[in-house]
Length: 576
Image (cartoon, rainbow, N blue to C red; front, side, top):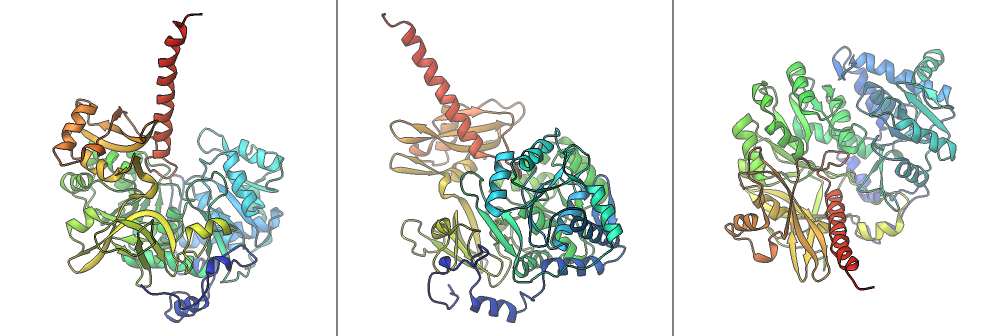
């Protein structure tokens, strides 16, 4: 595997702005090869908006804008936010907005004004947003008053009251005293007129979040040149162009929404159809109305819901060339059913806020599509698979930790020197914490993601890889979805608990019947789940993944209740 040719531990090299820089040799190489082009992200976006005129750019449930119209909106917002608020170029701004056109304009307008968006989600609470804002030093918050049940104004008030932020821009309503309305920003922009703001191409463009937000936030500072290339490389890998219509149902203000959907679509001159939610009927309505050519990210849970919805079989899906599943491992049987029942030949992807994207090639065979996440989208992406205990590189077809480096993968988290010592190697590879395996299929190198290091259940001295067992559980015809989590045990440390969603009309599995099914498939006895919980739905994270954290908390709470119930009668009957 190649190295950057520079000596020393780059993790100690954070600049004064809190960013661990790319090595000088890497920067020269990326620019010489044309991957980086010394242009800022807002300049690239403005050029894309200028280049496609009256072609449709963005469709939401309340707007349909051409590239020309979107450019006018973005420039007006950019001028207005600097005229109507105290925000200035270089300031970071938090986001709590849903999938509406105001979010598209606010994000692109913030970049154009020289602000640095922080891609937080509307589902984040006041504590999480406040923690992140203080860590980054954010000055502003852009919020959407009518999102969900109207909970976001309370968060904005709290952050203003304690001085965490000093400026709030409020879209789609007026509920926060001291906030500047979105309409007022646009009016100020029209009065001020357009004046471009220069942006340094080698600085921070925006911030993306990685993982949880408890304790010290893990914040990925994405820089102008690399983030432009990230989006362009994704669009190129998929062959996107002006005829592309991408339907995106997940939260826009997330790395997936920005780097897999909005920016690559705009750079390709295509159309982004932004769904207000991942509701199945809403998606089917949009497929019928907008005839998308691609769904650039579909979590497995959403794919399963589409399979379970009878109406899906009545909708014409023939325009969908790429149905890309990612976020969590897709069960082979679900992939097979999508093809068999809906005529969808899935592709899989793997990505992260830190950078690296992989994708199964368009010409990949069924085995690669069903069992792998393909290969990196750039020839200069570098992958190591190492033994987590020894850090030694391991052989093909052996599971180890995925470590990545490349022209759009960060070299360190923002203002996190201690965490960077653990999360990055001395020569700049990001240690993802994902368990990975390298395969050679039809002469091509492909990769599979076989779980998380922390998704290994430690039962005494034995280790159980959750995704291995989940995939085998899903071969049972009565099981619609499965999640295996660790439950605490006083003797062994952890035991396996299987959460199941049964197919309609199927008999619920028990520990015994599930063990019978798994044993018939050669599963070792120590890997068999020792508890089964049946649910109608699984809790999902903010981006549509099954939340194993919530399931672990659920089983821990259930066990505590059972322990209290077992102790209480004994105390009641004890002699006084």
